[in-house]
Image (cartoon, rainbow, N blue to C red; front, side, top):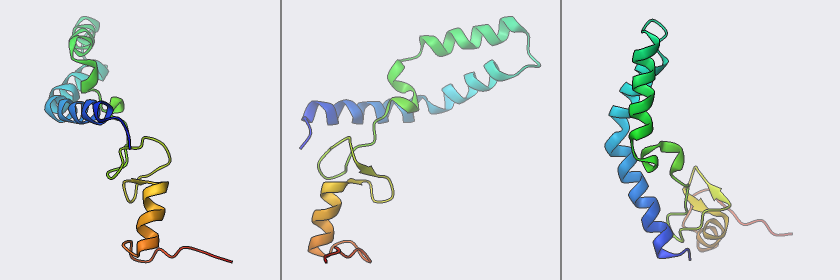
Length: 101
């Protein structure tokens, strides 16, 4: 099980990303628009830089929904390899069969 504080930090980041998504998208569009003047583009970049760092989507860490583990994460099921194996052994994931030979 991951530290509770790490899981809570990640939840806070997700909330910030959702909160600032529209504003970030608008500012990025202005900053990348080549038809605007350099001053306008630069002003948009400065406003982007003033926003909270944790409001950027790439700051959110993929974590297991069950254990909070950040490594060996399967995106399709949103769980770690360890949790996936446990759920598969219990028969809780349809179509997943533990191989044995």
